[in-house]
Image (tube, rainbow, N blue to C red):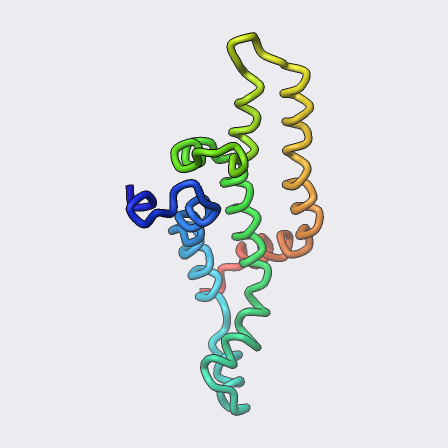
Length: 149
């Protein structure tokens, strides 16, 4: 109802905005930042960098693996989301992949061969994302296992 009140229903913003900031993302990045040594940030301050420049020049590049892990987990979990797009989207031009797959099932029977071909094609973006970000994912998982504190 909040999306309809803000007149955001049937829009891409309504599909993206509720999932942009999650508790899982906050927890994952918090845990990663807690494992970063404070000495690195302290050295940046001694070199004359302010808080904002330290964040963007030192901390964010070091957090790239954790951000990649968060991006992949979020993408994979909401790429397959069915219920929220079904509730918020009214038109076919903004329908997501799971909603499109549902259209293969109808009153005249199921077209299994077309549904399986579309399901196979729907997996390709996720596979390509995993291939492109595999180094960051391995680094993120490896760094996540180090319990320095």
